[in-house]
Each structure stands twice: as structure tokens, then as C-alpha cells.
Image (cartoon, rainbow, N blue to C red; front, side, top):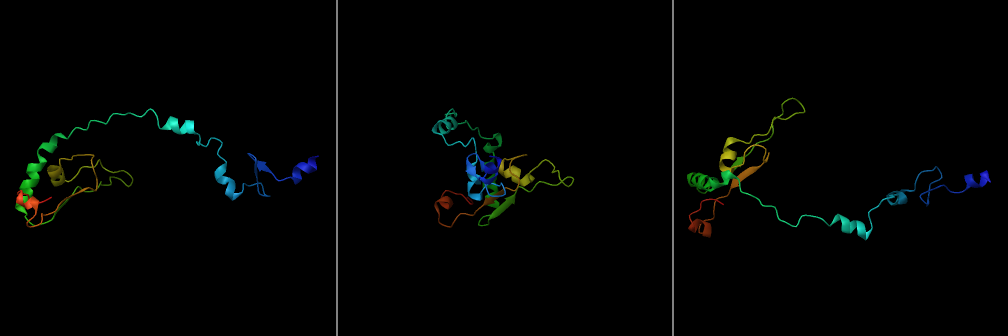
Length: 140
């Protein structure tokens, strides 16, 4: 009887194994005992979410940026303006200083510390004869 057990193909979770006892490659993705396939699981995962939209408040600094950008655009009509926020600075091999954007970027965007490292403000000049130019804008 012991001989019969050794001669049969080994199985795991009802699947046959290779002769060396390893699982067949095509069966390796099918050995999850708790695979979430059921409709009740899908219903559970998609229920109970908040139905309300979050109330997003504008930053206090957003009141001032349109006037600042307009003044900047009037100083450089017809030119594309690129103002980078900058990158985090390494302090000691594996630690960065707390990110602080370039002062010019912060002034014209209203975004201060801990917002977007690597961000860039680009002011594109308006096309001659466009609606924006007719409205008195210099950049978009």
C-alpha cells in the first residue's frame, strides 16, 4: 500500500504536481484559496463609499495670483515664461530637506511648501488677433 502512494502523482489543493513535487507553471495562478471572485465580495467592495463630493476650498493666496500673473505678462509680452518650482535638496545621502519651492514660483502660483516638487509654471503668449488678446490678456 505504501508503494501505491509513492507511485501516484503528487497533488496540492487537488492539482497535480511535477515529478519533483513542484507545482506546474500553468497552475501557479490558480492556487489562491481566498480568491475574491464572488459577487458578494464585489458588492461588498463597491458599497459603503461616501456619496458626497468633498468641498475644496481655494487657497487664500489664490486671490492675489491673477493680478500678479497679469503684471508679469505685461512685462514680457510675446515671450513664453517658464518658472520652475525646483527639486528637493539632498541633506545627507538618503534624506531630503523639506521641500521649499522657489520664491518666484510660490509668488506667482500661490503654492508654498510641500506642494509640488518639480512643478513648472508656464505662461504661453497669446496669439495675435485671438480672443484672449482682444480681452487684454498677454499670456494663457
